[in-house]
Length: 445
Image (cartoon, rainbow, N blue to C red):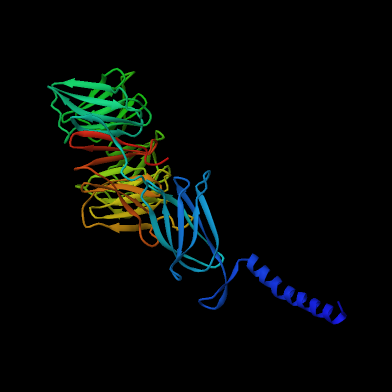
């Protein structure tokens, strides 16, 4: 090889080096050439976390109208990461055989990861097991992870109490009281196995284990139990009664309403509008009570305190209460205690009790409108901290709360005039329809 050829070869390699090196560096830093817009851009990425695991994900470019990636989430973590995506909108399809699919169109930005971390796929046509027939009503004993079924047997009523395995129930009976699901209510509490049965004329405090009425209360309102003590309001006095020692004590006078928090703290609202916790006043500015209004103290999570005035809900902020929303129904707190669903006959909203830093980001106090239905909404519960389960007429639906692009809503099941309750610890739906009580297969892990 003569010197001229060596010089040409050297210059060729040198030019190739000058061209390839910056291209390789730009590529390694996420730059790509967008041939449609004829410009150099930096890429973004998509990150998924899906339940169940090993689902298929299609990434479809809306610019090119073609599939540009097809991946599967990992077996161990249920996640998938798709890098090096040109900025733009992508149609995303998440699917798995035997499950309802999930779809959404989201944008990818330069140097950013678009996160979709809370997808839950629900089974097609889930199985429901019939537990009991001839049921008049059912009551979740949420503080005890049990459920009570109200039945009629001849001239007596029966309360059947099932645990999570739905085997042989505990049975409570009482003669001479005609059952009527319109006025019978069964109440449970987190710090005791005893329950309160509310009938038309009195309250019965019952130990389900031995079918023994411990106490009958008459002329009182809103009794609650903590350990072996029952608290109730009689006239305007707040009274505690220990049904083991039979010791009675008047805790406060001129009380408008009271409530027992799950940690055992006792709160009451005085007729003057001041809120007390275990006898200590906790807010300086009185709540302006009205004579003909009904009031209730609520605890959306471990920190928040709210007062319900008919259909208006006020939250304690600093020393006073501020109105946050209106709803004819009790709001329901999410399993992670960070959100509250509030709804009326046609609309559903989510109130954020804390800042949410992951995508989509929210601020504490945001009252997010989700959607509106032309038909009347029945009951609403949390399926997970990111999905709701509810009924509209005879249709039981599941809806995500991620309102980026369209909101995914599926029809899960169909029952006539259903009453529903989702039991989060077992991932199962409890359902009452046409005097029959059903339990679904496990809907979430």
